[in-house]
Image: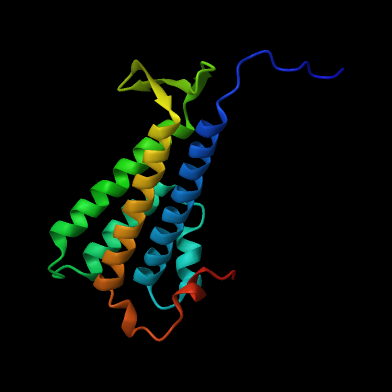
Length: 173
């Protein structure tokens, strides 16, 4: 028996496009944090790949933050680093809301996303009406945080003094 055609409203094309850009930008951010974590783990990037393999972004951030603070305790960049980590955690929290919400399209170029959950043994619920421009702005925010993170890390780790090609770090094992 064939599945009947959906009778529920679909999410607007511009909103879908913006959600897609959130996905792409966050994926890139995740890869950048992972790559710099490998560098902090040591010169053997294969070991870094093994350590970070399968980590959620939240766990990766915990590892990365601990590694950076251990390797660069007196870097003179502590305040900026703290701000960047807070930005990374904020975009991760919002990305989780986008990806783990139930979307209710309204057919007018917007959708309401909602989520039920538990916190400290109590049921929680929230909902938020979302538009394509809001999602596009969030995708841009992710790209901006990604760029700021990469610029900070290149300076903090003195990437230019490294003789390896940075793209080499993302090649398959």
